[in-house]
Image 1: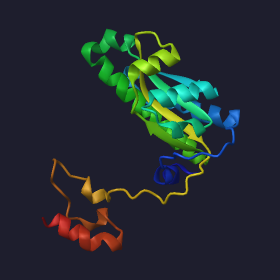
Image 2: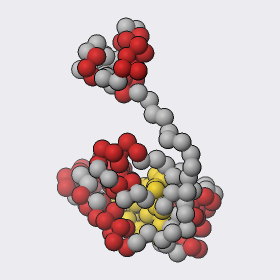
Image 3: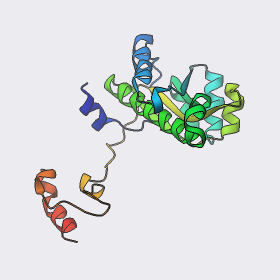
Length: 197
């Protein structure tokens, strides 16, 4: 699947088929992590791959009892190690480490979608519970949990806000009256109303 199609078709999947992910596909997804941009080119994101059923149950429990997660064949836990960043960025290190993990997560989500593998980004968890389950050292912080697997989710595609609702030019709140930015004719009437506000 080409990149732009993968971006537009990605969805948060919460129902999975009990089909394991082949190692070459999982490796391809994981390899996108090291291609993600990072602050000062210091890679602070660490990834823990979980396939053990008991561990997945413990992780789902740490993620505020989201038991649907257990069906996913693979859980990825993205953690940050911002000790090296502290030397350069001081009190901004943790902030940058969080951003680094988010960018890695997006690469993983898009790569999975391109291979027709479903995924879900989960940030609702109890940090101390995840640290205990994963035996994380104190300086390693969990940032994101991603579930991976083949989708059994029949839900319709999620509707997103039209671009014109979130797009400004030169300053916040300033919109463009140039209709070439919004070529979809079915939205033109709504866009004109929005731009004329």
